[in-house]
Length: 120
Image (tube, rainbow, N blue to C red):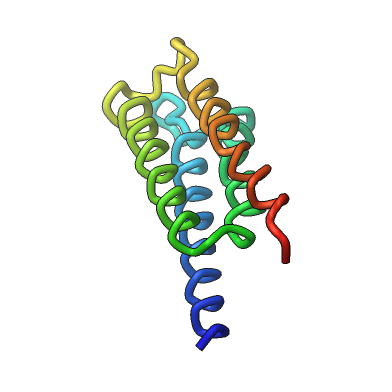
């Protein structure tokens, strides 16, 4: 039974990270006139940063805390991407698309410290 819980927790963490990487990619692909899209690598890398912190910390955390923090992370990032990319038309002049993921990674860093302090 413990292996099933571990596998379910790993699948949940993987789903959160995969959804977060899709959100980061959606925020980084910006329309370029009417011809196509341009990939803004800074937005992509900064958007992936909270999921790097989460992906390292979540497998070491209790399953409930890992899932709760993942859902909250996805909700905050989805709110940002929908607001900045789709509603405002990819006008990143206010810098929120860069600062909010950095803030999310900073907010998740205590979870990383908590996960690394737990005995295995």
